[in-house]
Length: 113
View (spheres, rainbow, N blue to C red):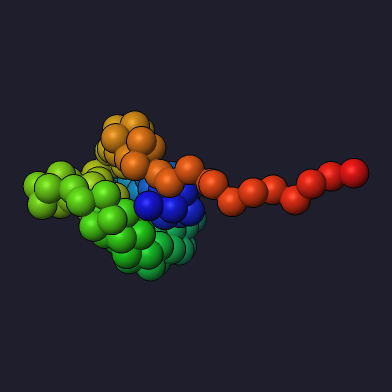
C-alpha cells in the first residue's frame, strides 16, 4: 500500500473532525444558547462537513480495503466522522495499525555530483 493512501485518509479525518466539532459548537450556540449569527455559521459548516464527510468516506473505505480491515473495524472507521472527536482517536489507532503495511520506496535516487 502506498503512503499517499494513509496521508489522504489522515488529512480528511482531521478536517472532518474539526468541522464536526465546529458544527457541534454552532448547534449548541444556535439551539441551546439562542445566540445571534449562529444560523449562517451552522448552515455553512454543516454543508462543508456533509460534503467533506463523503470524501472522507471514500478515502477511509479505500484505506480499509487496501489494508484488508475486518468489516466491523471498517464500519467504525467510516462512522468516526459522525461522532465529535472520535475521528481523532480512530485516526491515531488506524495509523499505528496501517503504517507497517506501507511499501518502502525502493527506487534508486539519482546520483548527485
